Image: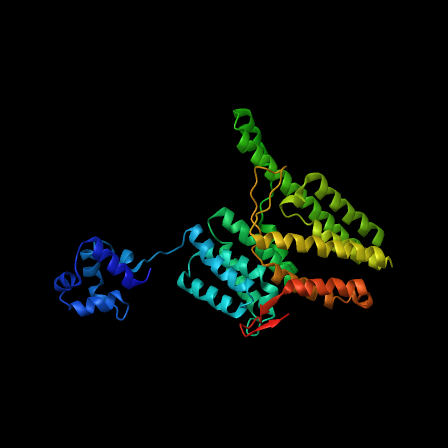
Length: 374
């Protein structure tokens, strides 16, 4: 709350007129009026007397807080995420930096802001003046991983590892992983077993579902890792086997219900098929990749949260990125891919690009300039 409004609110709660408050403090009523309209601010030497008169502390008067509550962080960053999603990248970055300056020691805010930067990093790096954003984001996470809050520190380490991989700083990424304690017990499953025995079924089921979904996602990601290794060896049959196994895992364990990797698997399969010269099959999977993504993005824009009949105890939040933003970067990825360059001569491939371009809609330029068609 602005200082003027705070003074006015507290004065009214004390049932004082501006003139009465002015008389006690030895100033004019006009001075108090200027304070309350933010046309002027009280002298620093008067803050203690003013706070006592209004029944608060100087910190309370100035609305000073060393750190924000998690709900406040979420709300403040949601405002800035909206700017990113609208393509107002420079404005969003400047606004985030101003917020970080306001709370320079708030590690939760730094970690959350870094997560937002990573989410929109492609757009940030495409905007002039943000060439050092990866290094700035890494610095925020390096601070956050030193937090005494174990969950916050673990989250920061996870994001920092991914960021260093993006920068191809592999030794730094491995060094962070070396800091992670080896898991000796599956605490969550053991906790679920105890809750089940106690008859607390809802809580037990929630833990079991969380562990199962996480295990399914981990299995799919490991299979994607094996797919990438097979591609580097140019073993396309093994690559297809890995991606098909990952698809089967997602189907059996229903992980795709709450944001799995199934859509991306269609793209990977298309790449492996194309390498084998199976262009028509590759186009089928590429089309499925775009179709499924467009459906998922439409659900995101509608505000519907993902739901699953199987994982009925879990609530997952979508990323918050807009369909137009995601379509823009999928369009760029397909249009600029060297691997898929020969497909650009196909009419069905050009039609796919046309659908994505249509989904992009009209977005502002990333430098906050006038709107233009992507």
